[in-house]
Length: 350
Image (cartoon, rainbow, N blue to C red; front, side):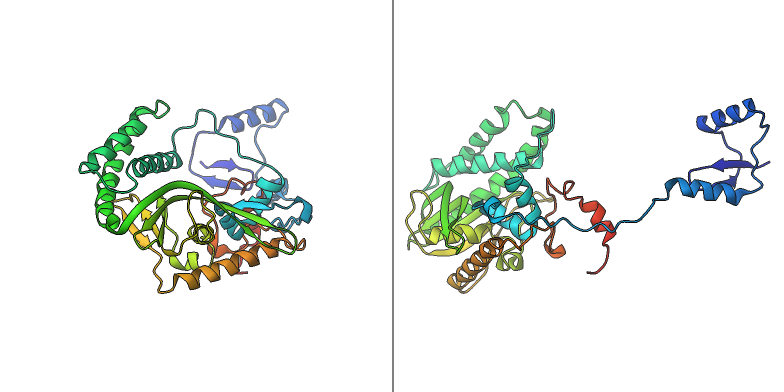
């Protein structure tokens, strides 16, 4: 004996199986109308009918959104973070700052990696503010004491999550203190979590760029090292040089112009990422290696000016993901841009 299975797209013969409730109800209705069994002699007829159910009236080639708002609606101020998004995903800038759309917070959301990163930043900021010049002899213990305050006095974090995050922080704290002992030999002062601004002159009007530096170290020779803490991925040197990861470059331009609070214009000598923790629990420092920092900053200044002028042209659209090589891993506005639809529709090398 053979059993016949009917789906939305096919009729399949196979081994005996228990009919679904839908099938049992279907046969009950057919029997009520006098049909003793389902006619499956013309199987292709039923297959064609099933296919017709899902067949669209027409196929539409979905293209990426490309809004071109007037200049009067365009943003005249951006943070360094959003300058990066203007490079990688202009549509997100359009959605947030022109449509004024913000993602709603999840209801009863669990703590996330972003929360962990914020806690680590706060701990290191507190430590640097407390000891901006010389390290105390018990530096590791002092850092742990600050860490305990943030981890164990924050009642919004579940104990089970703290049990996972605290050991990671212990590894970071040990690495940070070892780094500080060697790095601070030439450092005379540290400024943490400081805001700065700069003005980009454009034919269509001034454009304000702002940034918040995780840390700026002033060396004995009055040259600066700008440091960014990262608990996530660190951008590559080509991404930085090509201005697709411009955070530190923008901060350096602001510092060079004296745009940071309580800090005069000084020469930027180096840019440094501190990668705090990875899958193995380790940390590392990633400097932007160069023999001529001033040449890099001149190139960054040129790129920033070109970017502002580009979007001062009303013919320039705010595309979604214009460069597949430098796509942002996650955007709050991908669903609004219907990325999954047009990526599938335009799945070609172009």
